[in-house]
Amino acid sequence: MWTIETTRGRIKPSAEPTGCVDEDKVNEIVQSVPRDENERPVWNQKPVLVVDDKGDGFLAIDGLHRMTAARQLELESIDAYIIPRDEFDELIDMEFCGQVPPDFSDLDDYFLVDGA
Image 1 (tube, rainbow, N blue to C red):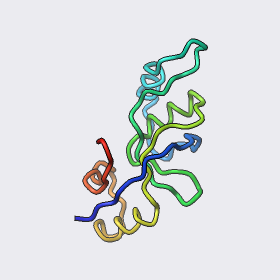
Image 2 (spheres, rainbow, N blue to C red):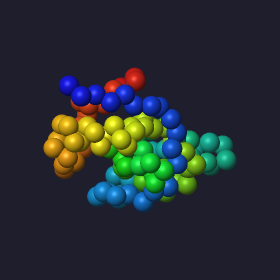
Image 3 (cartoon, rainbow, N blue to C red):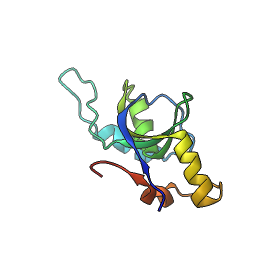
Image 4 (cartoon, one colour):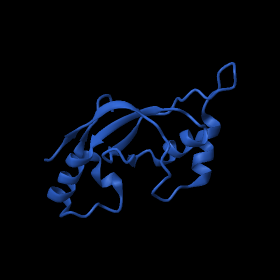
């Protein structure tokens, strides 16, 4: 089986979402984030899984709603597992005949994520 090892890092959640976002789900996440003594949000969500789009931002594989919530909270960065774009493209070509599956959960078995 084809697998891609991810890199753990931090990303800036600044990109506009490219998928269908359930605003109720985003609001639920925003409301669940605790605040510090100065009322600043303290991010407590699991890392997102993203594809590094070669300097043009990130494509969310898992965590679109968390990224959107982080952006609404105006966070500088959040934890992420980052997949290199060239490796992602090669996976799509080899395993899915060049067509990104409509449901990204179909890709779950292809990524090695530490601690997950």
